[in-house]
Image 1 (cartoon, rainbow, N blue to C red):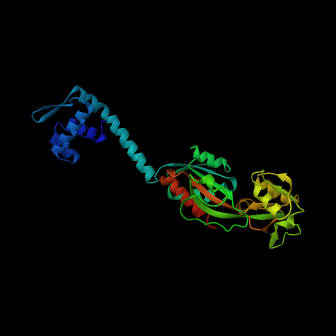
Image 2 (cartoon, rainbow, N blue to C red):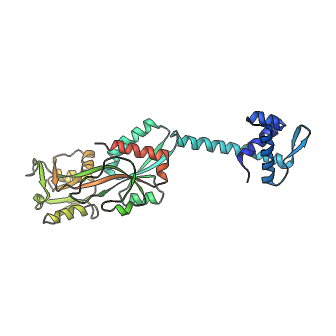
Image 3 (cartoon, rainbow, N blue to C red):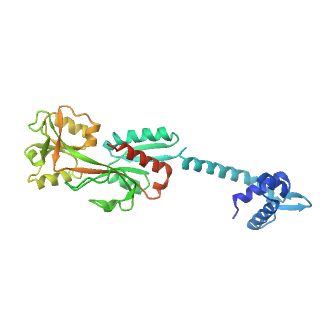
Length: 315
């Protein structure tokens, strides 16, 4: 196998005409140059230099190798410089996937800070909800996935921020046990009622107090926890409108067409009109996390993105 260091020595010998001159140019001894040339000739299986007294002359094979060496060394040098730039965060790319309310709240702050600190790092954004976003991560279609999972109702909030860890606790933890999980925040769900609603000015509302109201909720997968909590309170919510679009939910509530529960991040990203938020008991929360693969977690640009997402999540 031909080694790049041997090619560099060969080029120096060809340019200077002697081992001693090549050694001076390369900052090494004449015996070291001679040893490396012998190793290169052994690798290619043919003489590369003809030694006549103090002068060196290339064989036909040596001339061919020197001719190719220029392009090989230039390519290696370019590769080394590019890798060094990526490692030093002077370059690089991160493909981020996020759910919509994360895209409108956490992501802008995180990416603005990342661009300011490392302007050479490019980040692309695509929107997808879990579990599809997690599948994209595993299939190599993104580098970081901003995701969430609903906690058991009444469960104490998990850690906020902190270092990356493997998932291993709580509902759905087994779905992420092959990933690096960076906890970001515990996002409480709040009630949303029309501003003229009988409970609009209440400090806290037991979810059973909304048993007779029409509801606006998301898709069957997204509203699973809500239905479970309502049934535990003794009623099944009458869902008149189903939509995963948070502005639509807010507008439907504001028009007096029903009540809803939304994550605080969603409320943060949409200004409620003619609707009021109320604290709902028992507490309903979703855990917001950033996910990546173990190997990707070691990539400087990915690690920097995780750090900025964690900073943006501080509330």
